[in-house]
Image 1 (tube, rainbow, N blue to C red):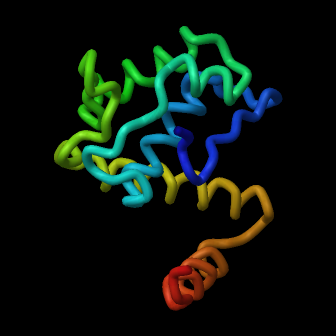
Image 2 (image 1 turned 60 degrees about the vertical axis):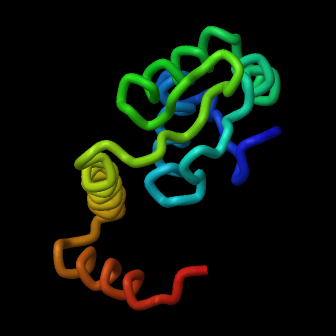
Length: 127
């Protein structure tokens, strides 16, 4: 059992690996790629798949559970929660918007150019 699309760890990132795992799973949940009651891989399996320590993945799962995004049960394993906590989708979208604006500004884009690019993206069909 694996998460599809794959989670990728950037070993050169200043973001700790557990946070990279947590953020990518949270994003997949918010986007609806991971659906309610879908089972996540066991900690050991995902850790082996990503080349991480078990504790790193366990911490990511604990953070996701604390945020109400997943539930954990002995027999049931770790599953996507039945519903997103109030505000979590908006929080994730806001964070992604901040990342987008920061990346665009690093490229030298002004507000109007950033807004045009976003409008263009909004008008493209979703694949």
